[in-house]
Amino acid sequence: MFGISGFKWLIIIVAALVLIGPEKLPEIGRTIGKAIAMFRRAQSDMTAIMRAEMAEFESLAAESKKTLAEVTKGLEAEAAAEASSDTVAASLYESESPVSGEEAAQSQDSPQDESTETAAESPAESPTLAVDDHKEEEEGA
Image (cartoon, rainbow, N blue to C red):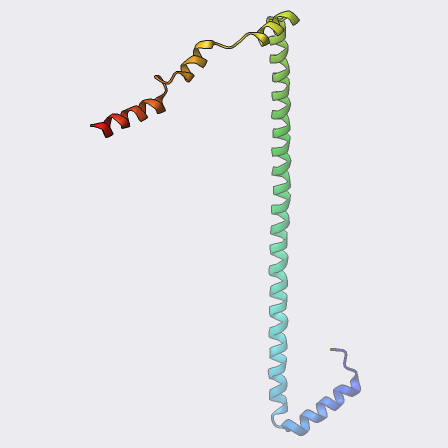
């Protein structure tokens, strides 16, 4: 026990008899025994608590893995469904409005609506210029 041989225990007991005395030695022995028993009880309680917590942790980990697998499976199914719907929509779009190479080139070369470009460039209709004009009128008055 504690890595101490029998001869060393004998020396410790003799030293305790000499230092403490034969009257108080049994009382100190009982106190040390109670302290060791209390320490062992606390150790076994702590071990039981740790085992219970580890079991709970392992069950939570298993539940988390199961939930993660379900979520991953759902996301993969959703992505597959979206990909197949995109493929179907693209194939329907291509079959409904076939565009020849010439029509596609003409649509790319044609200018955009000119009325939107001129309206944005017109200073009379620009909101920032109208606000500036209004400020000048107030300062002049």
